[in-house]
Amino acid sequence: MRTKGHRIVFLYSELAGYFLACTEALGQHPEVASVDIVHWPIHPEAPFQFASTDHYTLHPKEKHNRESLKQLLGQINPTAIVCSGWMDSDYNAIAKAYQRRIPVVLTLDNWWTGSLKQRLAALTAPWFIHRRFNRAWVPGTPQISFAQKLGFSGNSLATGFYCADSKPFQAIYEKRQATSPSNKILYIGRYLDVKGVQELWAAFIELSDEFPEWELHCIGTGELWDKRAIHPKIIHHGFKQPHELEPHLVRAACFVMPSKKEPWGVVLHEMAIAGLPLLATRHVGSATEFLMSKKNGFDFLTSNLVQEMKQLVQRSQAERKVMGEWSHELGLRRSCEDWVETLLKLS
Image 1 (cartoon, rainbow, N blue to C red):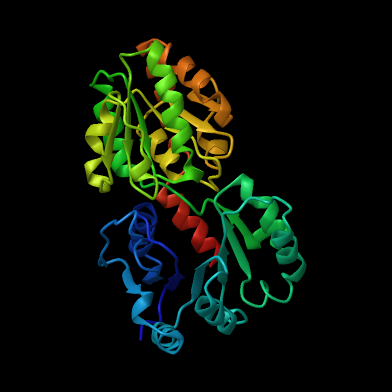
Image 2 (cartoon, one colour):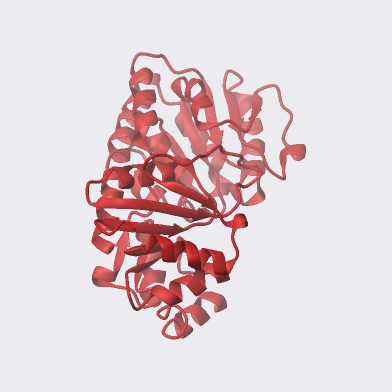
C-alpha cells in the first residue's frame, strides 16, 4: 500500500477534459502519490473520449455498488476526498465515513438564489452537510455566498474549482496571431433551452438582414438539434472532440455564450485563453472573471443579444484584435497549476 504523499480520491459526476487536465497536473506533483477518480457515465450529448493515464486512474461508477466503492477506497487509503455536490447517495455515504478522519471537500457551483430548497439546505447544513464534508471548493465569486450560508468560510472555503486546460488554447492563440479572422461568430455548447440557443439563432437571423457577410457557426448537439434553425448563414457542425475545435477557433471573430443559466461555464475561460472577443449573458458565472464589458467583449441580457452582436461586428478588425488580447490576458489569470496548489492547501 502506498503510504507517502497525498492520495486523493475524486467522487465525481460527469467527466470533462479540463478537469482531467487539472488532475493530470495533480498526479505529476512531487507530493502526490496517487489520484483516483470515480465518475458517472459519459453523457451521450457530450461523448468525450477519456482514459486513465500514468497520473490518474478512472473508475466508472456503473461498475461498482456502494460496498465495492467502500472496498476500493479502503485499498487506496485516501488522504483526502473531493466530492461533486451531495446528490449521489453512495458518495454521501463514503464522505460521511471519512469526514472525521481526513479532509472531505464538497464542490458546488450553484449561485445563492434564496430558493426554498437552498434555504432548507442552509438550515439543515449542520446535520447533513457538515457530517459529510469539512471543506468547500467553488468555482468563483458567484458561489461564495451559498457556500458561506452552508457554513464554510476562512481556510475551509476556496475558489477556483473549475479551470480550463490552457495548453491547447494557448497554441490556438498563437496561431490566431498569424491569421486574419473571418466574419464568423462561434457558439460551442449543448443544444438546450437553458443555453439560449434558440434566442441566439433568432437574434442572428435578425442581424443577418443587416450584415449578410457574417456567419454563425454552432458546435454541439442536444435535445433541440431537430429544432435547429435552418438558415444559409447558420452552420451546424454537430458535436466535436476537443482536438477537432482548432480550425473553428483560429479564424473565429468572436465567441458568444447566450445562456439563461450557467453556474460557471469553463468554455468562456477557454475562449478567453484562445484570444477571442467574448459575448456572454449576465447569467454566465465565469463572465465575472473573464469578461470585462467593453474591454474584451460585452455582457448582455438575452433580450439585447442583437444589439450586442451588432456592437461587436461593427468594430474594426484591429479593435477586435485588441479585445482578443484583453481576453487572453484575463484567461491566463487561472491555471491548472493554481488549481493543484489550491487543492493541496485544502488537503
